[in-house]
Image (cartoon, rainbow, N blue to C red; front, side, top):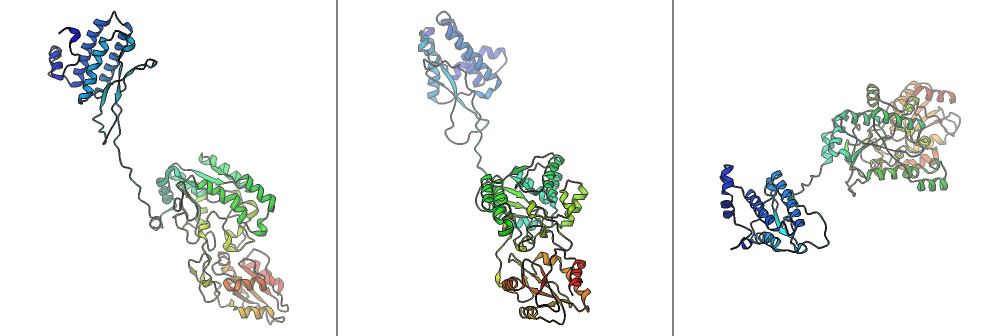
Length: 547
């Protein structure tokens, strides 16, 4: 059998015998399979070069490149090349050198490259990577460089672990006595970059300070309605510089604002309520912002607003807005300072020496848009500085609309000592309870209003026991009643919510709670107390001027 007729592929035993001398030289008892194959390839290529060096120099040059790259792959990653045990692969490999060596025409040459063995089934073990050598017929027009591809590491398939749903009611109960810092840290850890702090430019700068103290990354966004106070814009700038952050501002849709102003004017909210303006300038921009989040952090406190925030939990599933995943329950709402009193917030801000809105030093407590915000006076609740021309229970702009629940008319019938909150979720005790304050019934207030000649003048407050504004003035009103005892001026109260509200509006001039009326001794027409100051001295001055 001539050298040209010799089989070009040996089995493994033949390879071992052929390289026995080399193994003895290096004192290696057994060659690993991939080394044996490489040594044989080297020997076969050497024979091929001797036979064809005068026939086809180009083919020789290409084969030299293949040898160099092959050995580079073997030495750099011994496991990168393995021999496939299938008979079909062996037959293909066997025909490689015989066809290449017997072809005199370079255009007819069969050129092979190494291709990754595609995974057909199961999970590939990282320590058992395989590749096969397959002959590929070269296309005549193809001029790509021929480079063997290393076997690709295929990561094992791991079933995605579904995150268990959190019971946020239970979590809220567990965090009820936690500090704001602990609640803030818990929120940032859980949601990472998918949570952001809603910053209004008021005392909720405390939220940013708490987030800063955790040492974790955090995001802050704010709603620029286009009608904020200049002092609020200056605070935004100061906060960004103080903490080295960039606030993500959200703006209302220009077309919607233009249509509202052109149709109803700049101050329509004084006539038909603030809800429409807030919906365009605040609620819709907020909705867009929250669609990119899975959770948000607010500065809501239980002592902030009458009847709407008294039961705010530290964490809840947002009942109104949707988050990144869409649908009901896709957004979580964190309220880290829900259980903190307003004066404690201010003690914290002063202690930490953080930037605050300069409007606070001018009597502003709750700060919103310039036309709808004013300072509060002694004896007033902080929320009375917002939308002061509207009823107490309407003092939400829509950002926290989920706090407002449908009123339970059965509990607001004006009877009994208990009273329902405006949100219809709980009852509260009656207020202004003292021997010097007379509780008037519907008949009693009607008789008082109809008398033209009274024996004594009367001071009467029209109130609702769930109203925080009424609750805020309880102490001063009771003190006033005690001071007027024996002076000839009677002090009374009339509960004007529920079924009595329409009567109070039409017959007594009720605007919002509380409304204070003075019934002079010689006049049937009551006089409404015009001021928002409800401290003892201001109320006493009003009475003394009229009696």
